[in-house]
Length: 289
Image (cartoon, rainbow, N blue to C red; front, side, top):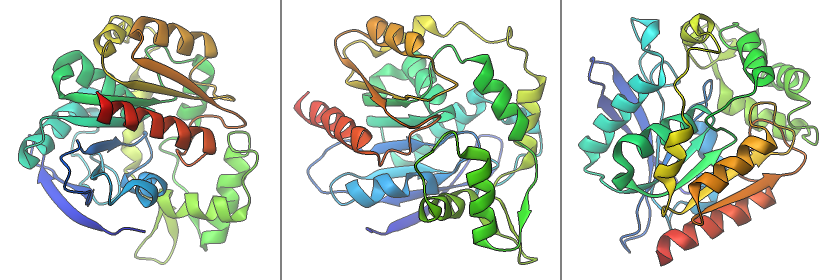
């Protein structure tokens, strides 16, 4: 796999944050800004980077409270608007003014906020299994596990724990798949145990949030018009319904494509054949735009 450079930047409130920078070619194509899901980190995009790095530059941040980024003193800063401010500072430091956003779940919410506030930054966008309306079943499932500490003696134990809790999401995974996911989600702590690689306090804003407290994000869909956009949906997703996905694409206009990844729940990992082909179509549209 093409290697990456580790980079660091400072958030507006003084946290030292980390990102991976995979080099691309020198043909002037926009970088891919890869924004991970709630409990995920920069490593979540290793399969995508293995395929695209060298041709495309990939910038993969660890959001605050994840992996190599500092944990926040105030857990109530673990919210999308703060992540948006953090990412804005990173883009400023790197002098990046145009990019393709690739947002999985929470990363897709950040991408929607970018479209709402700085659509001129977007050369293209991928929303991975997320939309302006999230199904209550999926939210309840996320609330049930986020912020619950786990500790395992070996990587195989961690992989088996993932298989038990996520078997419905990835029913076709074997032990090798689960081990790969474990290496992206967990870390080895100083005591030699395998633990989740994020601040357990990221759960606090989610627990405090009521289902009625959100902002109506449907108007944001119009901001994606005339921007090459891909909406990926896991066929088994409990967070993004088929009806919501179809309405999203309708409101985004002719520049949007919906691709459904069969046999997968929330969220596709981006290495599935349907995902690979759809991403290649998106990037071709970005280059030809």
